[in-house]
Amino acid sequence: MLLSCSWLRTFALTASATLLTSAAALAQDSTLTRLIQKNQLPMLQTGRQFAGTGWDKLRQEVAQSQFVAVGEAHGTAQIPQFTAALAQVLQPKVFAAEISPTEAQDLTRVIDQPATHRAFQQQHPFALSFFSWTEEAALARQLRAQNVQIMGIDQNNMFAAGRFYSRLAELSTGKAAKTYLLRRAAAIQAHDRAVMGSQGEQLTMLQQSAASLDSLVSLTRKESAQVQALVQGYVTSARIYQNNVKPATNAASHLERIGLMKHNLLRQLRAYQPTGTEPLPKMLLKFGAEHSGRGLSRSGVYDVGNLVVNLADMQTQKSLHIIVLGKQGTTTAGFNPEDASKNTQSYQADPTSTYKLFLDQTGPQAWSVVDLRPLRRALNSRKLQVSSTTLERIIQGYDFFVIIPETTANPVQ
View 1: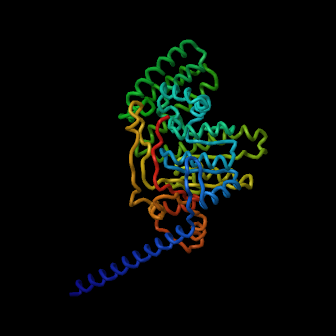
View 2: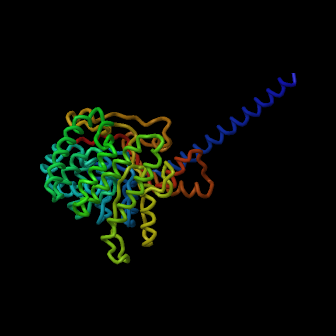
View 3: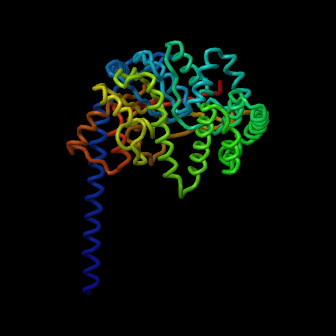
């Protein structure tokens, strides 16, 4: 009987605690929903033009900023169109993208002429990463027309190993090295083209052995400092990719990649500060949403977006951080060089997503622009509490959350 009474008391206490926890969670969700609705403005897209009170607010904030960082979900047509509109307002001198420095050089060389761009892509499928897609290419052309430097700060593209070897051959002076590199470029290009559509794990950079990479280093040891630097960058990229797919080294690989991106950004910005005292130019940056916020990212790393905050603070300037996601629609999610239809997939908002409370406020027509700064102030003053660390980092990391009601895939150029 005593055991029975004890069990009943424990059950009652547990049930009460559960009810209180549920009530608290509901209250938090209710407060958050109210703040989202209160600080939400509509924005309309017509072609490549934007209007509405949401756009007016963004345009005002962008015009007052030195750096604007856009965090996205890759693969939609609408986000590069939106970024192009931001570029018209900001008038940046530099556009930093999630591509490698050598990829940015290739992009700058071919993007002005659509025919040249297409020919390059036919020879080197997806060697320009996202800029193989129509709307990303249109964004790059607009930026070039605005005389903006396109700056790549990421590791080498895993689809571009063949192009990398051909680039080395172009730059190498030794006859034996040049001959070998050209032969390897052709072989790698043929192999990667055959596997990238269905067996991406077999891409050269994901499988290249340490001995093969050591041989490449030895082969180019007598070449120019430029060639040797490119080879070291390729070796680093292969290591990052290969470690990223292993659970034991995934976290370290992610940290190495973020460190590389920061290093590449700072190295290339030196050209704008030859004495270290010149003001940095206006910059527009576009990366995956993981990389573009201030403070800790969702994975708990101080990513590139936080470095942007430091660069702005260093000059007593403002950085603006915008996350842009679609609620549903289609997206480009494949890399099949032979059948572009296989690169498109449909999606719906995940009901368990951290973003659900934001996405649920979006109507069927207009885009939604949620000003996160009042939410951040409520969070910091403890008037708002959230149970999800990820959700808290989103609110702390971004100034605006732009929600697209329905996206369309970004087709190959």
